[in-house]
Length: 64
Image (cartoon, rainbow, N blue to C red):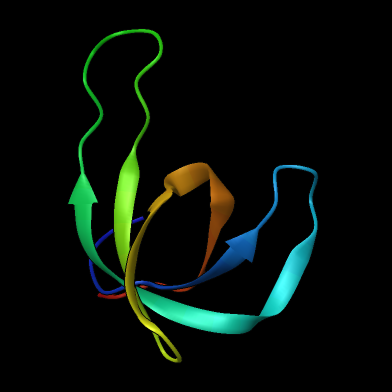
């Protein structure tokens, strides 16, 4: 996942959602300790920006 990628929600149980779609605008790098998480800031088409765990999201169109 990188800045500019289009994403959708993807639950850890494998459930995929068609909506909403968003774009990665910032990646907060995880620290080097066992319980760190990679967080990403998403610009959602419908509702502005929000920060999410990367594992909740699936890339649907990669930026170049």
